[in-house]
Image 1 (cartoon, rainbow, N blue to C red):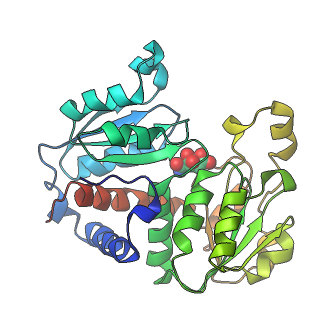
Image 2 (image 1 turned 45 degrees about the vertical axis):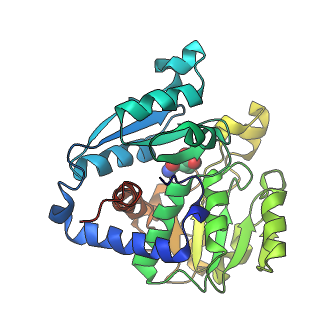
Length: 304
Ligand code: NCD
């Protein structure tokens, strides 16, 4: 039995297979419409979510399966003090696969150790968010045809942004990737990631101003300042509008640069940017369903 905790749980070859499956699902949805007949997905969300939970649910339903779950810790027995280990042992008897989001780093890993069914980490605190990474990689792969040879700018909350941490982790395995980290001093990428890049000799640069690096970027990954992970509101208010991407800032960007964002967006991208053909974040959310369909099939070892 396999779980997905970290994007590195899949080899580059396995990811490639997963993306090809996701592409086939997009092209031939009818072929997969009953692949999960009789199977149940449990979505155990101890933290708010729109896209991740609903795209998992949509993915399972589009595969012919059914969904149970909770979308709020307060409506689960966690509010009575139940541990994730106990919860997953019980859920293992109710469902065939589980997607879990938790505010505590590592909670889905603890659950996986006790689980009788595959567990997917749907975001653990400020740590990782592997299915968002699969979504991000599929978007790049579908729209650009390859995953190597990019200068990628990651902008915003690089300290608490779990999507950023996961994506960096996954991209270092592809040749000729260069990172440009764009953040205020207080929201820089964690040291453990910088150490990993140094160990692997992967080029990176840390800057504060987005404008100054815009012309070199092939991909720009914008992120929201993660309000829920701040210890004090004053810091959040001071930093929340540090970056606002608008059409005038994009004038110096490459004509084929992709603008990605895991969403939800707050103020960091003006709505006027949505009409720019380089803005692909809504398409990205759509690819999230296909990649989660491919992931469910892969973890349940169902071949169509
Ligand atoms: C992200 C998350 O939950 O980490 N959202 C998502 O799953 N698409 C990003 C965010 O909340 O900023």
